[in-house]
Length: 369
Length: 246
Ligand SMILES: Nc1ncnc2c1ncn2[C@@H]1O[C@H](COP(=O)(O)OP(=O)(O)OP(=O)(O)O)[C@@H](O)[C@H]1O
Ligand SMILES: [Mg+2]
Picture 1 (cartoon, each protein chain N blue to C red):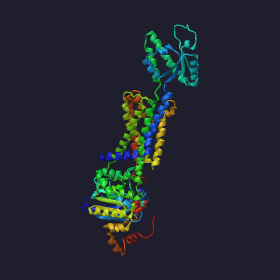
Picture 2 (tube, protein in one colour):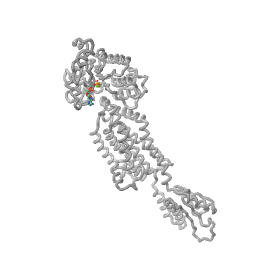
Picture 3 (tube, rainbow over the protein chains, first blue to last red):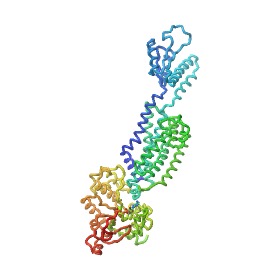
Picture 4 (spheres, protein in one colour):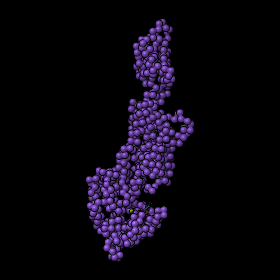
């Protein structure tokens, strides 16, 4: 126990004092989360910007509470009802500064005396059909709600709102598990491989052989340090992702991501052990680790979803531990999934770790040749 | 365990070790008495380090066996390890740790407290350098730290592989005094060195090795008079030849 603690402390110090390692294992992935999170927040957010020219009863009458909900998906800018304002608004849509214009026909200078049903005019841009679709569906749902209210039958509106919100999987729900998985993989593969090579080259392994220290203490200290690192990464990632700015909402059994991260770390450490056994220098270990982790991250959809990837990529990714880790984490973090998702993945990751550790054991060398 | 094996601090029987086509150790038999100061001399590549490492239990011999304090040193023997202290020829330090952290870490692995570890640092004149990382120590300072780390747990048998290589004259004398003190306290010391004056001053007996074999073992003075020469250096040269070798 004492040896375990001593070695853990030694390894932690050695790690924290290696600025490059701290950067690549902690700061670098975090930068991705902070930047990607901020970038994709706006592009993929379902929020649309609509200019309301003059009074439009249907919109003006929306109750405050529902207006609040609506704000998540649509911002409404109200201008005065003049002809100039309408022209200005249409110009804004043309330039892409606004996504749509709504106005009541009367306010646009048409003569009164229209029928009993109020008409709402909507103009959207033809350039961005996705945005145009969003605007149309949101405005449509607002109108439907009003219609429902008029008829006194509530259900349809609630349904429509839900669909609008759910269809748009928030980017952060996908980015957080993807980037966290990548960060954990990098820390575990790189940390393990580098440490093994450095200790072999610096003859620390042989020196420890002469001290009354069990191999178990050395290995468990290394595993302990890596698990600690991975859990710190997880805490920081989740801490940032749930900030209101990024808006990740954790679902019921989100804590299952912790055992997932633990088993994932073990799986990636086993890759690191193999790399560490093969690599002859620290630089080689570093390069090999990157050569493994980066393609694995891309193929596992850590940065971009694989929905659009060719079938062979998706088949290949099924063999990668990172993909299963990220998927399962996404499931438990924000899709409300639970043991049913997590357990098979944990089992698979442990099996993967066991097989690779066995291989690494065969390749292990005490000293540099 | 035989009585005779236990009477010796170290006994090695017919050790052999081959690396590829190099027969690094070729049938070494030696005994070191308890409390003895024992030197292993020999030209570069004679097999001194390999012999020591086999005795320490760091390498498995192809043939033969080695016992320290009556315990076999191979396979790795947990009862024996705390009783021996080893300074390797090439020093081994943890990455990015200061001198103080290095020795405290090694101490802690042997159950030695931070205070005693710091005292050992002081004994080797490294208190001033306590906060300096291993890669920023000078060669001699690193060497001293390496020896301090080998002695931190107060071992009964001490192995030092060229401990004074790279030390300035002051540090060398200082280390001699220290080693003499250790030896006076009853500890067995085995060292290798290329300095004949050092061996002559410190060692009760020396073994002269070449080509993986022990050529002669005796007290330095006895060897000098036996070969009828003036110094241990002459003994060395006359036993191992004068010509330069790789
Ligand atoms: N790990 C190794 N792999 C292959 N050959 C080795 C290894 N270690 C030592 N040798 C060879 O074994 C022989 C003896 O080496 P050893 O290190 O024991 O010599 P030494 O007497 O300690 O020399 P020096 O005075 O230079 O330290 C040398 O020829 C060396 O090249
Ligand atoms: Mg040597």
